[in-house]
Length: 310
Image (cartoon, rainbow, N blue to C red; front, side, top):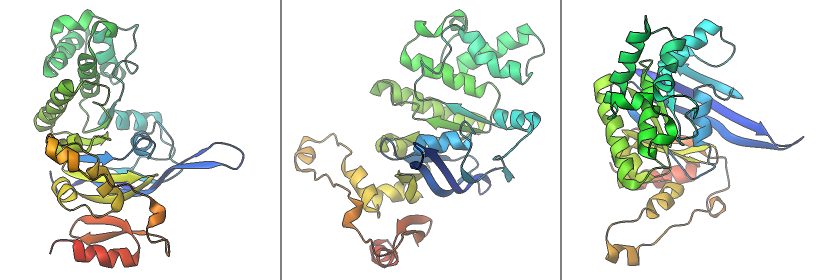
């Protein structure tokens, strides 16, 4: 991981109208950076806004407000077709459901080559075919798979096809939106190990969105914890697990099962209710210790500073 900021999220909000006066604040004022070469994990329970965040960054949703700076350039707002095409090549997405994200009527060779065709990355059909073969082998499949349809593959194989499709245009940044949640546990490890391998070889940067904290710890350099559209804590992977400060983060970590029957019988699961905590002032995102940020009030900030390691 370098010191170069690849992506800067500044006060990003995504609101949806659900009626004449009702508004859902799916994402509400997010601020974080992602550095070149790192994996930034974004975790939280279902409905917290983490997938909406990823889709807003890549412009599948037009953000309500805020800025997304990619390599210093704001990608939000009106863009020309040429600018959007360039942006779409640099940033790709791996989706949660490996089956519904693949066109069932298209052969694998055409699914993977779709981006190659759009961006004119192959001079002829033979180069296109060879590029697809290379991509299939890169993700652990074979060239014989190119002429098959998505329904002929297992869930893990389909997700590998989705990864090959994302890699086809040689992006710098990939948003992985719960890429392993629909897979068996043994297959999850294979896909995550593949992503780590590709990151080293292709110098990729990831935003890894998930609700499985144990897997996020394994793949991520830093982790942001979301609750109802807002970041409540952000720290390095090791620091977050070793010294969680926000009560919601503590509740998530307390729910992770351990491969120890004795521990499981005595494990105390922590419930989080925001009404049980300081309501006297609007919480702010503050740096409690070096590179460890928490959404808290001034009184909570003082208490957390005492808990934080020197």
